[in-house]
Image (cartoon, rainbow, N blue to C red; front, top):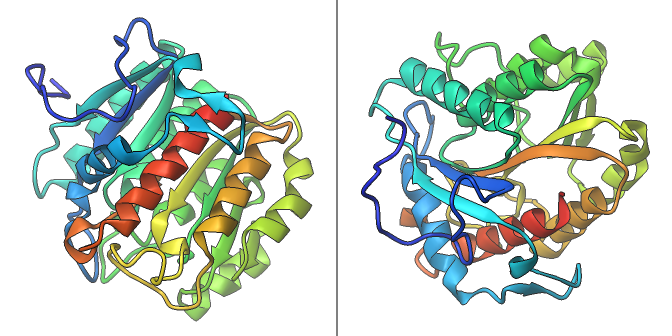
Length: 289
């Protein structure tokens, strides 16, 4: 069982369709077992749902309304606390089922390692897959203090699976020297510090391709998103991240799934991080398919 079948708590705004009716399936991945600084992102998915109640159902950016799409919120997965390997296996199995059923997965994290099993499932389901990765951190380590299952490793794993030339990272402003050396020599595409402008330059390289989009909320400057596990000064604004999402939405790529990770409510007393995240999710729902 992946979910609590008796769950009757808060769902994302207008995500009220049954699994069978839905084209989009939203699901929480409440895992933060490998974080290296501040834990608590396992509580992020529910706080994003709670914050969504303050959203308009209409996007003035895209001139679309949530009533135009069919969304099912499955709730949070019942992941075994502290067991990263089993949790990853469960997420991969569930993602495989979503793709098999023709659903568009919208994942809520959780630490960034939760994106890795979904990327694996997407690679098995789609040909010619590419990744758009928006983040403050490179996430290109092979291991962190001896642990290969770490929130510092998912993009390196994606490079090794897909080929680094199929991975596009934006907004990166933190990492080990070796991570930046790998990015420079491997053939992957990394844009440091900014997101919207370099994304606009690169997006046509992905014309017609199947693309999975993963966004770490810490790409935002801590002034816009204090509620995250590893905040990094010098980040982008909420406006720039919205611009990036809309650039992807208006492009010729075929987005097949997405996630937003690393919202940490304990460090978000004003809820500004969760409020921003819920809006980004709305724009991805209305723009990506």
